[in-house]
Length: 98
Image (tube, rainbow, N blue to C red; front, side, top):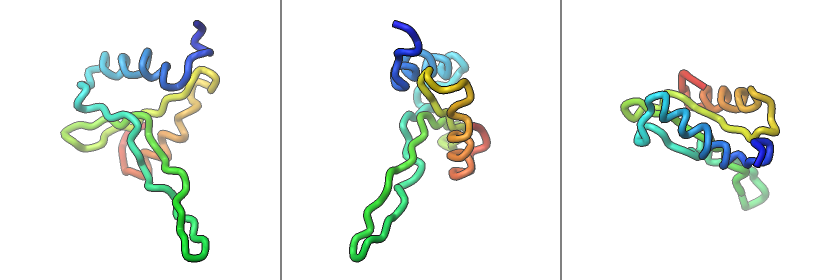
């Protein structure tokens, strides 16, 4: 199977999680699929449904303080394809690294 055929989840499982752990991060310091927002509120009369929630693929913690946001993409995106999304989430959460 070619890397181009792998889903984002398969990329994360096979490559990104092992790379983060190889860099010295312990499993207790890594959280996956962390919701960054509750979703935008769309008022419609008496109802106010929420839109889609934003979710970071990884948040890395040091002493229970979020230190970095990591965004994963499948191999059909360019190398820096998730960088702008990671930076946006890092700004929203006041996290120093993306």
